[in-house]
Image (tube, rainbow, N blue to C red; front, side, top):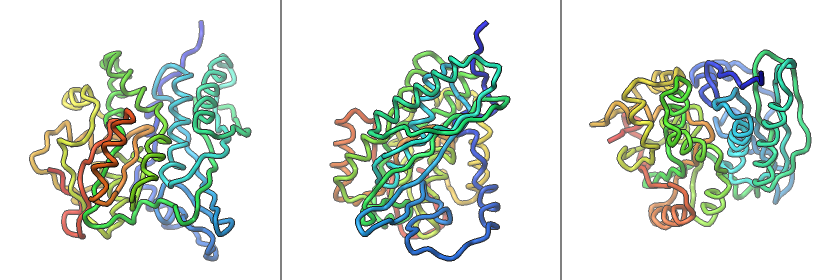
Length: 341
């Protein structure tokens, strides 16, 4: 009988370590001498590292891998690759090369591995990059992802914490894929709901990034394992606050029903616990609260753009077929850090 990918306890970006745990570990790491060519490093809590190699070129470097969240190996490969490639786009970069990262049980059918790698390879090609090799190990479960290298002009690097008061927040994909995958794991998600989630997760952020490059974007991040609230708080960086208008947030509609049925992820609850007193909800339904904390796999870009250009950017993104929406705005620092109303 043919082997199937076995669900792990947390597939996709739900498998991420919690933000609180990561912060404690990273704060204890020794720091070497400061390198002025390192424009963005891990201490900034940004999406990828950026290293200047000349006056007009910087390298963007990232990696991402995780367990499967869908049954089909080919689809899993596409999702994992799209998720890893996303960090390059979140920094304003262009994908150049990628390396496979694979853990796979030796006793399983190698055709499954081939389908995972085929899905990943096709997404790298779609991104305009070259798959240049990789590394594999044998293990008890499946893990797959990419190490990706891109380039960007040093003057055009997009970081996640330079938003300005008054900037509008634009989200380029719908939320709710973590909850949908949880519901699917226990046989509750509809085929239509999962199809919508998969279509979102396999869509490259390349297209949104190319459109955004023509606008006055002050900050950018991609929404993944820490959920919208978690990644928004990284964008605020203790210097700004934000208002989110929950009715304007694009959501996979079926996710609301599953959230009301408490088909939630442990990672989503970790995200909620970490946010603590930093978020105030005003008249927000329970399901929507959970969706805002829901870990996203291959989620959309969250852009902070000047208020004068936000409407035009939203319109162009939507004209390209993306479910983008202005969902809030940045404000001067106040308490609480994030208000959802």
